[in-house]
Length: 561
Image 1 (cartoon, rainbow, N blue to C red):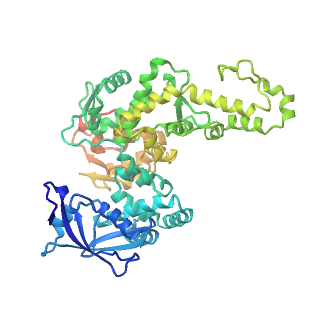
Image 2: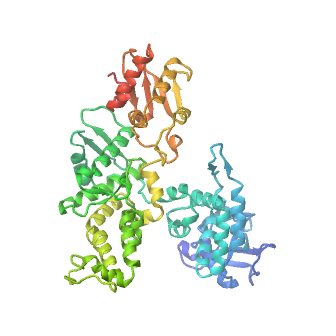
Image 3: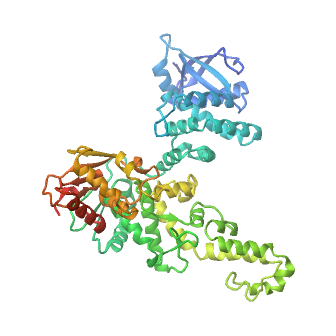
């Protein structure tokens, strides 16, 4: 190690013998014996190397120690301590490859680690940490291809044929620092990658972090939930959240699921007038433009609640209107977007613009004027010349001006639950509306298949062939879809299945209750466990099961009825 006469690590250097790999596609350096500061990273060494060899941006450079690839984030001091030779020198080799060629080879090899599960899913195997530098190669290729259209086209061609392998690399090695460039390749990412990336935008509860405790009466559920959530310090949300209903003993994740679902059900209840259902799909919601200033806190609360549900991966059965989603994502909307939410109005505007000028005039321009749309446009009539401006201003007034405060409050509430540097628009930019739907509303298939349900159910102190178990599934087979959802709700505190159906839930359990045969079933929702007594006849059992299903009775932890 050489010292330059001053103390401190930044003034120390290490002697490195750097030699070109015989198969490298880059020129050899003029010097092979270098003095490199210990305080810099290998990435900084790479930058100097590029200047020394005049290496183009389309080339990737890799450094090896005894055929092991070294991450560019590694400090030279750490590399030296671990790999120095007995003679005090550090021996390294370098190899340069075409970025695109390297990417094709790396993704091709990564694809070999994938295999198809019996279910048809692509299973991702873990890749060794030595593969991490290949993610940096992808990042460089994204940067370079932005100014080289031909390279960009070829790069995207590789990603189209190696999508699963690309998603494997991102899932295994991507960090928050990679979010920006991965977002540019959003079209090549699957749902699992998007889910992996947005989870990074929630704060991690590191060290001793207190959890927020919610304690509410069922009869005053919304009012007490709003007060406690809005009064809580934001730092508490970085930890866990514990919910308990007053005068009830049950606690745990099952109670959290139930609380979030019930609160969302009330917040988005159309009778509350806070949100309105979409014209073409009454399951979807957007802010009510007639809401009052006093409702601003409720909109912020709604944003916090939905963000909490996404953080804890709880399906709450809420769908957002497409235009509302687009605005939350930070995108501009236009009248063409109405086709997503109000096809009748979209057609009216389309017909109005397509109409020839004489016909439009003969219809007295439908008697339209710019009143209300603009403060300085009173009594200005709509004509064939300004009709496009009228439509643009109509959209601006009804979907932006009238909703800006509500959307801002909702967005702030959603953002309250994210990491400091994250925003609502960044979070949602990783997702399509369909992605968000599957996370908040669950499976697109709303009917519950009993055979699938049985497949993901285990038994405790029962056998699948026991008479009581056979009776139970016979009862479930005879239920309506609504009753099956009610039973699922009683059993798991989940009314809607995740996007993957039952396999998206932990394994369900039916366990034997050793109480009286006249007892009602009970549920331990935190453990996804249903407790069944050993009933003496089918009709008695059916009466008990249908009762707890229809009444939504919640007796957790095996308490007697």
